[in-house]
Image 1 (cartoon, one colour):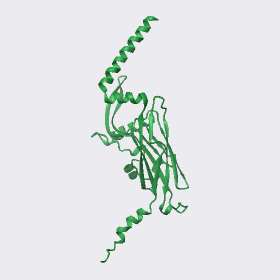
Image 2 (cartoon, rainbow, N blue to C red):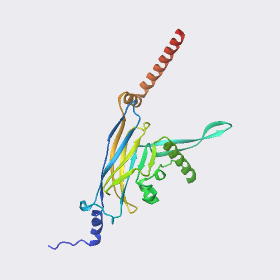
Image 3 (cartoon, helix red, strand yellow):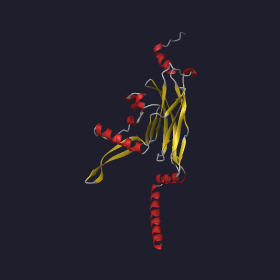
Length: 255
């Protein structure tokens, strides 16, 4: 029985992909617990670039770059714009975004615009100006852009949206590491640490590691009670407020 010969054109993509380097990433902490004394944490993202045949890149090879992105869970958020009318600041226009990440940090060896073009940045959401926030609005594009930039600016000033253009170190073209600061005000939830391998303006490989950020101790108990027993939690809060107010008044009368 004669074996069928595969056309070289069909095998070419497999041969090309076999020549591409791959990533072996990891993170220093898979679980971060937030207690009352939590003042932030530093996340170390590290790993290796594996080249075909285990070879080490030399000066003739096009240098490969690594970009890491840490994202928090997406959330729907309503952004309001305040305007000063008759000397009073009031809420004016507003816009809702359907999928704004609660936390976003990107680290790269140099500004991301120098590594990939605008289209690639938009596809992989590389950079604060490339986030896909999905505005739930039929407003003109200019107004959507203005509100999106406002949201990014607000969260950037709060330390929740971060861009570090010179924070990835690559040793011998193989080992890499980057540090990303986790602020004290970080939201809880399932985070992802995405690592991208970029060469000659193209994303060659990507890998994801999960990170769980959660409350612990008394903070976890309070958060769980507020979510799972909201009515009882509200009544308890009211009773405690009344009791503390009465006690403060009683002490004041005794002084």
